[in-house]
Length: 238
Image 1 (cartoon, rainbow, N blue to C red):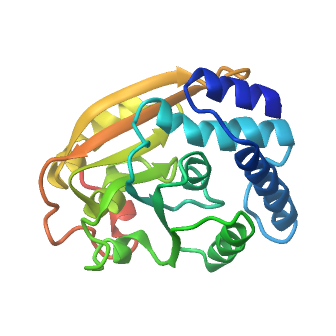
Image 2 (spheres, helix red, strand yellow):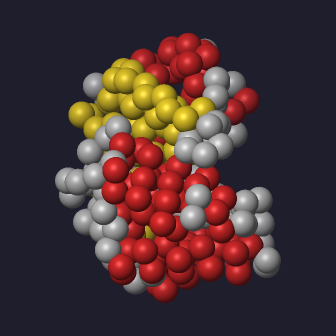
Image 3 (tube, rainbow, N blue to C red):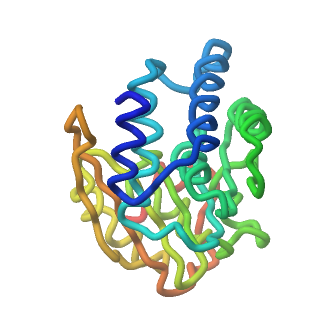
């Protein structure tokens, strides 16, 4: 996917990018590749692939959820900033918080936000389990996103405690999403969530399956969740 195709396909979805936004994506790409030589941020470094598999893929959440409002978003385990930074570039009014357990990635994101001149972005070096028990962040976000971080039963415990009742948890998955949902059913309902919808599509050009799972927070998460770091992964709610 070249830059023109990226711009055109987003246009078709009603997302039109200004020259400044296109420059931000270009600078994002250059910075990602440059820092990737010093630390492992991504295995994908070819420009066409970064635009397709990182940028376009991240923005695809906005094809199925309305990000045009001034939402407070938390991105769990964002790695090199996906999906929240591409969404922030497209929708500058969003307030974005990113939590990641690796300090090196946080350093990259802080540098990135500075050179892209992003406002209202916050970075936290923490485990999602302890972050979700922090009173300042617990049930404080309109939307919590995660992109392929862990299976749904685990991911729900890391993300749903951060969503305010009435808010949404958006999980971005490749194939097997429906099987993961079935296995994660108990976890989702235990943590106060309810499946709103699942949207499936094929990533352009390479035709690989993508699924956007939207879960609505219908009641508060019981205080004991999330459990201690590592526990959700070792003993998922199933």
